[in-house]
Image (cartoon, rainbow, N blue to C red; front, side):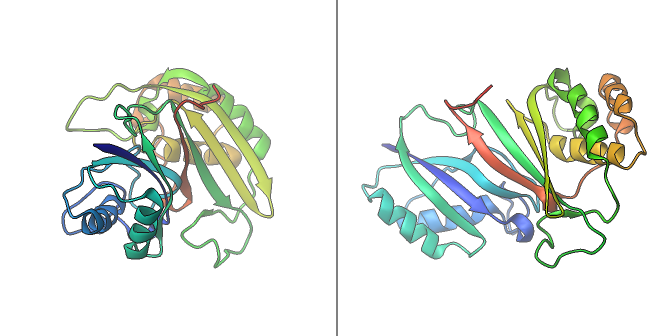
Length: 250
């Protein structure tokens, strides 16, 4: 039995997220349709991250098992030929049997894009968060330092009413880059809670507008209470940029 690893790019605008939902367009659903047609057997496709509706990816990873001996280059070409233009497989590898796209991951990097000028750009529509007012980047950087480390991130995540989830997470780095009206915020961490990056970005934007102080971010974090950070950046600007395995730099 072969264990096949896929690296996938997608524009998530037209989809209800990664996870398969009956009668709804999802990234996993489109991949399964294409893979099962090519391989002619049911496929269990395991994703590294369950990205939400409207969220994009440069480096989503998934794996599945097959007993078919189709060459990897042929598999990639055939599946891409069946996928819609906003989802593509960029790399196919055969990996050891024990590889699991989610549980073998050692870290992830998310990118959040903000388009920051007084007029929106049609080229950034649904691909970034349009913010027409000035942001104080230095105060945002100062505030982000309070989030580096191992903490209870309950204030920065969506509550899951169906099950208890350990809210302890580790953020290793938050980096900012501003160029040509575009602010890119990158977040490195071992793993993330649902909506965690989007709440962090929205909170930092509140700091950048002066509505919160950098010290307020520490207060919100220490509160361990989602109601203390009632902010959520839109999904349009969020990208799963990379999933790390043996190459996580922290």
